[in-house]
Image (cartoon, rainbow, N blue to C red; front, side):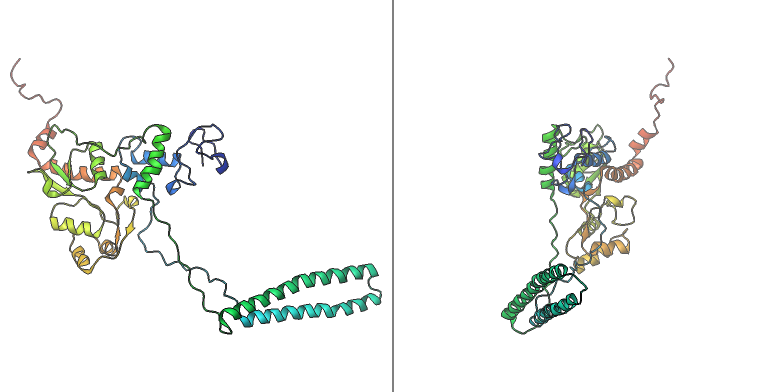
Length: 371
């Protein structure tokens, strides 16, 4: 990793203890132990991208989903391990032992032939003795050791199952590591960052109160997510965020925002209010989707999902298989664009907002009297 202070490339032993050996300054994240293999420069770059270079505020939940690598909503093929080495067989081990002993016997019988060659004068006495002794030692070492090993394997297999053949190997289980939760991300990443640098990441805001609007908002967004509420309020979007459509002030139009899930689309369709949640496919901003998978939807849910307008058949099939994405994964820019587009369409139909929009900065009401 690169040191966030001196930009030197550090090996693992050069960053032991959470500090750089080159400049001596402390850093927050080591990719060897941090969640999602994060380091300070990577986390800072993701935060800068979420905030559009400091123009927008974001929440820790949005940052948590942004640092995760995107994955396509496809069911991976089951893990098929390579076939393990079969267990020892009594007959196989005995055949290997006999073959090894035969090689040893051929080597031993080859010694008289070597002596005859020596008597013919092809080699000297010293050379012949060296070859004989060295070959005999190597032959006994390798062949004898292999024969003993094969004999032990045959005895072990006979003691376990007699003369029955070896059973087929049991398939290994593919162990998947558990995902890092949002609480672990906050405690291991954000708290560590705050401890090292003395403040949060620029633009991070998890708790933003509702601003005091001079004019009551014309739109209320029904979304139970605290992250969506904090993001909209922190960025000054003139809407009121409520948990349920019935909690909206009287006379205020309501729009819904929910998880990209089958249950969310069905519930929003039954409530009847406009739904701002984008579909799971065919969108330009589909890179922000962070897919999760639960069990397949029930038949009743699939039938109700078929009645939801605005979803393509492929999207209905994807949601019906149990794929879903939390609403907190939506970046601030995408969230604000969806809400602002609907709010401006409502404000354009309001006579007071239309008159305020048509009023130019040079127009002076009640200035028609002569001076």
